[in-house]
Image (cartoon, rainbow over all chains, first blue to last red; front, side):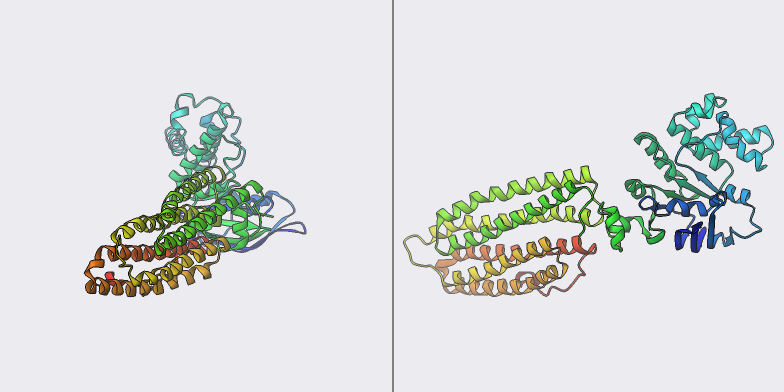
Length: 252
Length: 236
């Protein structure tokens, strides 16, 4: 399968500091890929290069190539707003807009001009909330504020918001670290349901979570991609000693 | 290997490994003592071997409890997971080895009773202790390989099973010849055939242990090899 995202020899610098060191990796459409590694290993930095979130950090500099369907996302002609609609993102802390549940989801399609008629927008909101597994819980209070929901519901609202603009890739940066185990299980179930429709990349500190939700796992250490392989192999028989030491809890 | 950040994890794994070694030691002793009881013959010693088998069973149950606890509480990964799974399976196999030794011990009074008043103590009984040493040696080397996490040593154990199978074949032939020539000895020799078969099975189980050691150490199954040891009966 041709890769959805193909990173070629990517390095990231924050000023003189090199955060990512020549990383190459392919993400295919049909997979959930997990990035694991100790704090400061560069996994979140690398994730953020995939939709140019690092552009907002003035000192950040990216070298190498990141191709989305073969197209260089750092090319001058690339429309960053359009790119972030194609490559959506969900963050560690749920960050709904201080607006109604409906508006949280409708905002993206509206500004991207995906729907103008009210009926189309309604349908889009419902579909997104359904895909995010939130519809049944909120359908009778769509005009309530998004911030009034529970943490787990807020996170699923953020996923619905990301889905609403019909992205191709969803990046998740520790989406469950602020959630309780039940809300976490719902997000994981949701990731499973979304798999195949979207290419999904998830950064997580919870190795059990990486093992549960992903088909492929990438282990980062000191800005390098140490090992990338099938999740089942990484967690039962990793090739690299550093991977083994990390996942078995022997890390320095 | 580097220690776990959580030291209690190392303590748990260490305890698990210790229990496997202890079981292995008891199983080896049981084989040796059962054969002593057979050769002398010494029904009292045989009775003790049968009674001592309970200790092996008890440790196996303890290994199961600890392994399940480690899986539940520590969520072992990679080499740790393989080691816990291997320990669970090895404990079950060593328990079976203990059962074979017990079965040999059980036959000691029966063999003695078939020989009451007569002096039909047959000569091939002298071959069995050598075969037993070979089988017991395989058990010891398989467990040493586990203790050392030594995949190469595990391969050597598997390879030596062919010699034990050959030994069994030759004892089988000798005993059959003996029965043909001396029909009065048939019931006694039939028991000895079972003893030889038990020893041959102990070798097979030591081979299983070695295969698990190899898996735990390398993460891959030992390549299927022609062990060349399809024994006499199987060839028919």
